[in-house]
Every structure is written in C-alpha cells, then in structure tokens.
Amino acid sequence: MKRDIFDRLVAAKAAATPVALVTDLTSGLQSLVFEDAVHGGFGLEAEMLDEVRRRIRQDRSGLLTDPQDEDGFRLFVHVHNPAMRLLIVGAVHIAQALAPLAVLSGYDVTVIDPRGAFATPARFPNITLNHDWPDEALTALSPDVRTAIVTLSHDPKLDDPALIAALRSPAFYVGALGSKRTHALRLDRLRDEGLSEAQVKRIRGPVGLSIGAVTPAEIALSILGQITCVRRGENHPC
Amino acid sequence: MNDTLMADNIIEQAAAWRSAGRKVALATVIATWGSSPRPVGSQMAVDDDGAMAGSVSGGCIENAVAHEAAKTMEDGEPRLLSFGITNEMAWEVGLACGGQVQVYVEAVE
Image 1 (spheres, each protein chain N blue to C red):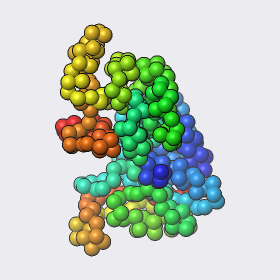
Image 2: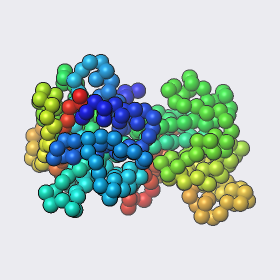
Image 3: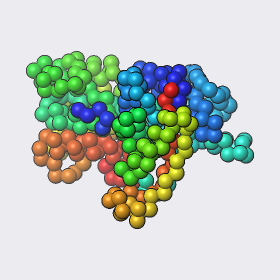
Image 4: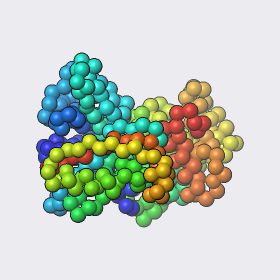
C-alpha cells in the first residue's frame, strides 16, 4: 500500500469519515473512494464508482467484477465506516457493565445522565460522558441508522424524553429497561405524548434477550446480545 | 482494555507500528466460502518482528499468513493466498475451522 493511500486512510478513520479502499488485485494499484472524492492509483468508471459508494452505504466489503471486462478484472472493495454508536441513557450499575462490553464489541459508546453523581469518570473509565438532559443530548448527537439507544435509568423523567427523541430518529435499535408492567405503563405515557403505535412498537422492552440474566453484567450481556441480533441476525428471533 | 480486541482498528495498529519505525504488512480476508470463521474485510497486521494484531481466521491460518507477510515485507510484492481448511486439517491443529478463505497480503510503504 502506497504511503499516501495509507496515510489518507488512517486520517479518514481518525476523522470518522466513511471511505472505501479499492484494490485492483491484478495490478496491486489502489484508490480511496469517498462520498465526494477519489484519491489514488487508478480511475474508476462512473458505474463502478456508484457501486463502491452503494457498498459504503450498505457497509458491505467484497469483490467486484467488471462485467465489461472479459479478463475478469477483479476489484476488492474494503469499506471502512466509522464505528457503530451506542448511546446509553442512565449511568447506572448495568451501564457500568454494558459500556465496556460494547466498547469491546467495537461500539463508540456515550453514557448520558444529567446526574453528576452517577456519570463520573471513576465509574466509567475511558467512556464518553454527557451530562445534558437526555432528549437534548440525543438530539445533539443525531442518532443515525448505525446507532443503538438504550434507556436504563428506570426514571421516567429521564427515560421518557430520551425514548421520544430516540423514536423520532432512525436508530436501528431502541431498548428500554423495565419489567413488563413498567413497560406497559411507559407505553401508555408515550402514547399520551402523541407517539403512534408503530413508533412505540419499535422499543425493545423488557430489554434484552431472554437468557435468564440476573446480575448487572448478565443483563448487559443480554442487551448487547439483542443489539447484535438486530444488527446481524437475519432470520433469528431477537 | 486491550485495543487489539476491538473491532476494525487494525489499520490504526499498523500505523502505530510504522510510526515506531517497524516494517508492517496487512493481510485482509477478501472472499470466503462455506463456514469460514471470519468475514470479508477482517484484517491482521504483522510487523517485521513477527508481532500480530487482529486475525483472518479463528487461529487456523495466521501462522502461514504471517510467514507470507514476512516475504511481502522483504520484496514489497503483494500476495493473494487461498486456503481451503478441511476438517481433517483443522483437527490436526486442534481447531474446528471449516470453509475456504482468500487473503490479500500487502506491505505498507
């Protein structure tokens, strides 16, 4: 890999800019494809460029074969997208287990809790903390289709505004901690706030896969398992 | 926390090694068939001391890939490697890998 390509790739990753490294496996030449620019060793036909950019959006690395080329011109597209995000509302005991588990799984984690006594660096080493009110924090962080949101505070004053903001975003996962009874009451409150049946149905609650989890770490595992299932598990019940 | 366990940071590891003055090669899974243990795009970085970060299988072929990576660091030529991992082989090395993988190995300038 040429130094210039490598340095640009490292910089793009550091800046959380989506990019694809395209390698011509026959010649070894490489180009970097961004949403609005191309840098590198060879040019790409407009059609191929569109396909590479489609793959960035789909987060799908793989081989491309040019149908125009009988010699089997083979390109490998390696998509480097920014890390998936997990936004946790409520800097509670379960969050202390969920945050590092999610970091280990490759998520960029933010813990949101306006209560300074909960969201402290001592309780959450190396985790990004946000002390804004949850709905304001979520709006500012603008969750996208690569974002998961979990509310854990058990306090409707924090969880409800967070859920309303979450359900108005395209987040791929929205989960809420609470028993069946707590969850039913929560859904009633959200309906009263004007959310539709389709919107409130997006909430995974009671949160997590049913694995008989008891301890905070086990509950965190069941939540991360469910997030993984929603993200990856086509044809799996989540 | 061990950074090399985290997903998709092998490029960063390679950059850190290179900044420290070490030679680095990258191995990337470009195609898989059957039940190969790691998906397309999985990467391993190897330095000229034989240090490894990341993986391209569940431990079945990393040694062979590191060996080829050393050659790539010597001559600068990329290599396209194909591995068919039979269950018999997997048994011999004590790993239950299956499937087939193609791995592209390149040196970082």
